Length: 291
Image (cartoon, rainbow, N blue to C red; front, side):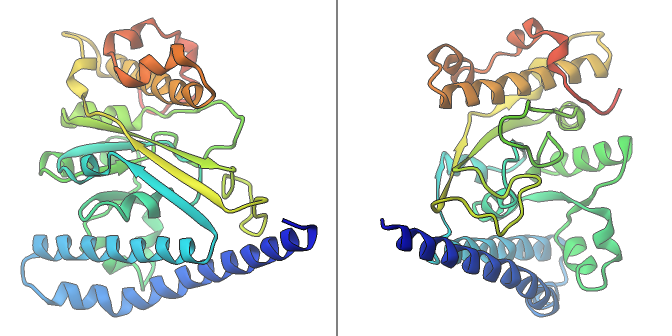
């Protein structure tokens, strides 16, 4: 491609990216005032309404992803997507971009999410997030119990253990909240690895700073892992949570190493092992919440 062609391509993707961000804001307001209330009014059963609203969310996000693909902003691929649609699992994923939630929810007709507590004060969004049975991001035991309760009911729950988007080249920082939730619910953990090439829309990267070419999102859904295998008899919950968090750090660290061509680390991704987590050094926990 010529220099002029590259400049035109970049200018188009800056414009298209700005357009889809505006589309997201306007679209969210529109469906919150139209589609979601209609779906809620379509039944007296709150659980049926929850399923319909979450299905509507999936279809909306899938359409949004397709708009970005057609506009030439990105491409994406999902490997093992069928496992995302099996109920009752805690879906944990790394968080490299601003689009991770949109992409994952677009693959799942039913999934509960943790959202900002401030949305319950938003006059346009408070009812849709409530009807969808999303969980407010409260503190400590209240959040853990709310998440465990939704998993015990057989719902799936999407969680990002890092708590925020990552920055390329920086160490993975894993909080312990996801581990406490998994252990409290005694559920299966479904690890999901998301990669973005070239990196974009990461923490601190403004939307208009587009990469040199359209980026590709690759999602790999791992095998489910029982949370119970990280628990030891007569052991404090905090220690079990630390072991599980260490395993998650090892899992995503190994995934990064495998992408870089490390065959040694690749075995750890393919065959998760709770016992191996005990062998990881305690300093692997770079940050954590919950005691």
